Image (cartoon, rainbow, N blue to C red; front, side, top):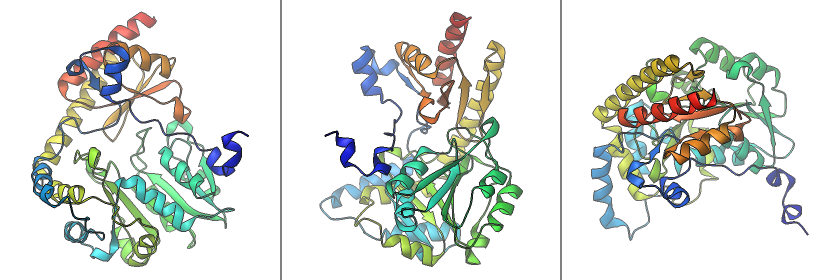
Length: 366
């Protein structure tokens, strides 16, 4: 009997998440010098982790024999202070991915559905399928979220709507007024999950705290993996109404966030200089990419986050060709975008190396 025959059909239908290829694997596959490899595949912070986070992390090491604070009390207090919320409105997670899984587990069941963009973050679909519910993907013309189409796909069995803004992997940003109008028109039985993974890169992001204080069914999810540079520690958080957070606490695993991750996150929140330097480098990198890609006649999409999309004939072939040169990018064929690669912004040295390889590759394709 095939192993898939023993699985629930919803689980058998799940794709396996393909992360950005790690440098260590490229070394093994290609025999390259690891110091010469440039990784621009996972939207990581090219400046590394916050120095203040590192200091807090070091200070936590003596307590590694103890279980972490299961309720992340100090971190939630810090976040509450920063965002002018009550601590009972905040939930910590093992990366924002875990919180997305909690939402699906708590609010979805077979016969119900969650609405998301066709090219939305793949974990929305995975979490929904894990809950044995329908993942209802809405078409995204020109790789842009169409909230009118979202509204037309919502019915009495819709329990969750997932939206990232800016979106990963397309990078599109839905204007504030459109998002607010859409959310204000949602039925009461729908939970709106607003993914703010890249919100720190925006100058004027949407603020849902006033509607949350009114009791609207909205949950905003954030991560420390991007601008804070803590991807290796797996920590994120969400904020919502006290009742929604209490519901998610019922499905949260005990001790889900390690003590080191909690302490590093507290340090990162205070490191305004690191956040500012990261934003500035990102803008410089996006401008540099845009200028150089126009020079070589390469079709691309600039994002409102920390990456760009580059149009190619075959994402997988391009990915493999770039690996031979020690440059790791992200092919998007797993998202149904087989003619795009996603490229994270890096240090200026990394950016220049990528453009060197891209320029040579484009010329060889013509």
